Image (cartoon, rainbow over all chains, first blue to last red; front, side, top):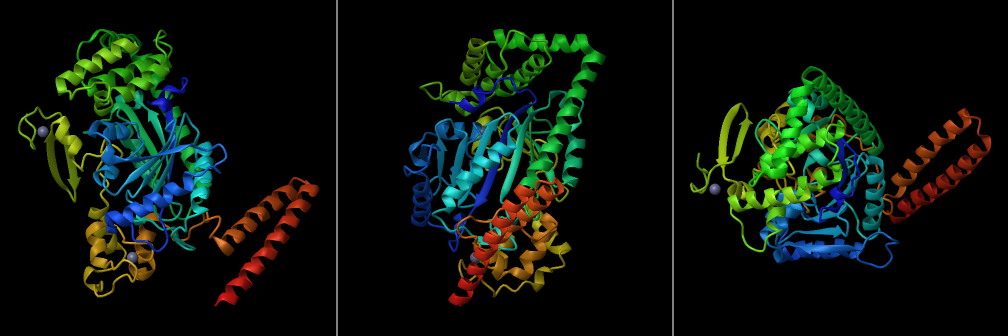
Length: 339
Length: 181
Ligand SMILES: [Zn+2]
Ligand SMILES: [Zn+2]
């Protein structure tokens, strides 16, 4: 479980890169217009393209049907960024194709017939795009896509037509969050057809200071152009985060150090942790490691915990249904163990 | 504060939505929040105003110069039977053919969203046909130019051969298309 996150070795501000391609099958109504039989046909058809022996080292891929999974198992997949909530809200008509190390996930009958996702640790958008294109070509080898010379790949929502590409990078931005600079970044990004959003939590700030930067415009630019501008923008954000960390260190070095040590202290000894508290403290520890202040914790351990402390993934660690308080207790125990 | 949905557990998830200037607040417990379709982990509302396609759709139609009354509801997509009214309600088209069936409405809308209306990206490998070949030729022509600029004449000759080959296959593709019609 959570292989993608535990495989990361110390990539610091950039956590993961992700490519998503939206594709639909020619002359077949989109998923929201389909009954169960038709939906199942599509699932079989898409899985059929990836279940053969001629995949040359790619795969194997497993088909996940949600009617066989518990609620915790389903939501844990959401927490691991493999699938969306929308996909499981339509469980009887949808499915996911996932590979062993969970860096490929193909959602079937979400908003579009096919949503192909490739995730890679660190800053690897080009590699992820190449991999996604390979898989896309394999599927297209046996399935006719809905495609128009002018509008490109046709999608259920007009916001995705063209390349159908959503490229995104998950970033850890604690110093920019503290200095309340994320709103300003959002405004700037919107002007260049991109956006930034918090990944976890709700309200005005992102829990755990983890954000996702992605392109909004999908038509009129090639895949390479979209990725190149995203790479440039992310590079700038990383520079800003580093500058903000340095400024923080210079102005409030002692307070910052105290904060970071207190965070790891609480994580090591607390008996109950809510997911919000755990994520925020883990964010501090991650920043402490990146800045060389905290030395006895490996960054991979923190990255893995970020996923493990999520409610549904946590529930999977227990064989009985947990209450909120019991979850907080188990969460604290898991964090203590890991640290 | 108790959860607005079950009134039993403490509300730990607080959602503020601002749509068309109207602010609404929602307070839920963790369990109810997870069941709530508006609480979406993959599209979090961490910062700014949540992006709701349905809510901005009418606005986009307005600036695209399409008045609601002008939309003819009699027209339906021949493949999926969608009407323009269905699209307004759901923000989703019914099938790929809807874009052609409602060209007059969809093209300006797409232009508002993306700024452009000409796809320049990937073309399906197997079914892309002529367009795929043309894209490949364009790409090679650019490579040819670079190699000439770099005075790599051997490489340039190789690329030139490849272009010739592709142009031949484009001709064949073209004739094939005519033959079918
Ligand atoms: Zn509740
Ligand atoms: Zn249609």
